[in-house]
Image (cartoon, rainbow, N blue to C red):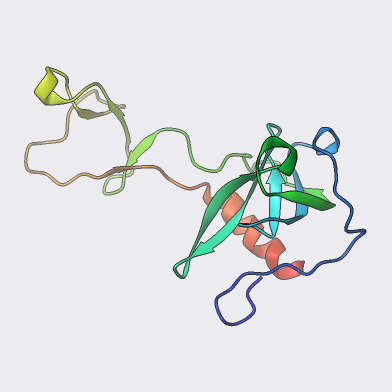
Length: 152
């Protein structure tokens, strides 16, 4: 939730008592007190995936339970993530931002490798053609968290 100045904040409700790590349920949204996120979905491995804002940009980020050396203190269980939304921060793999195709990497060409190539065909990008291997955020989870952010 934004306070209008671009800063994110969370309405503090509930008991204010920390939920222990072993009590957190994978795939559930929690209200957290954290350095980076106000709400987070527990990933089942001590992390809470939430929305962070930095330099006027919002993106998914994982902060870890305070008992696992992170800063996230879960205070209230809110609801389960709907079926069909993966509990991951980023889509697995590397994707070309121009074509949307998945890419793999062998080793640098200077070391005798293939460099980047497309997973579906095994072909390298055409010499001189633009490509940009990058990670892709989990848009479904991001959109769902944005909606929940407005509610809570």
